[in-house]
Length: 249
Image (tube, helix red, strand yellow):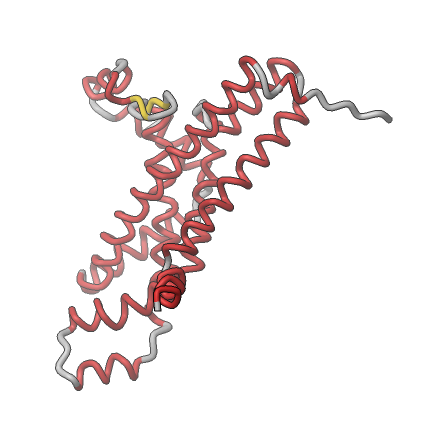
């Protein structure tokens, strides 16, 4: 069997524009989802630590709900069910075209598909990030906390300078893994018609039947984005900061 790949049919004309648009859309929705997931993780962590038994119970229920429900089901719920319960006036504003809602690369962010995707990715990923950071905090030796108390550190100072500093370092690699997973899971948004990279690859398949070439390039773009994210997190993370200080010295 002679397999002939026609890359020109994918890397030119309309298919190339679709690939670029899908890649940039995936990039922007990943960044927005990471930001939302991080903010939610901080809020949930604060509630777990300072909210007493009620706060811990609420956070435990949150984690159980979102960790044990498939993300695709959550996406479908937010887009096809919860969206319809929002005020009609708000939905009308979102469905209108706004020049200020265009991100670089001609990516429209103020749309039902973009907003629901970011919301679902943020909620889902925050539940996993919270557990990774909790495990990192628990890995800090209790002796260090006791030593800090003996030196007169307040509970807030202990958390800031002892627990959080070392806990984040302990959990950094799993946290990075969750952010990378968020990027990959954004491909599920094709199920609600969100025009990210996977959606555009499938559109090329329907357009000119170059399925193998389109999926090969789509896979390569996901791989490149994942490698770039991993490198950035490694460079700007706790270990990366130590390497930079060592070079400066």
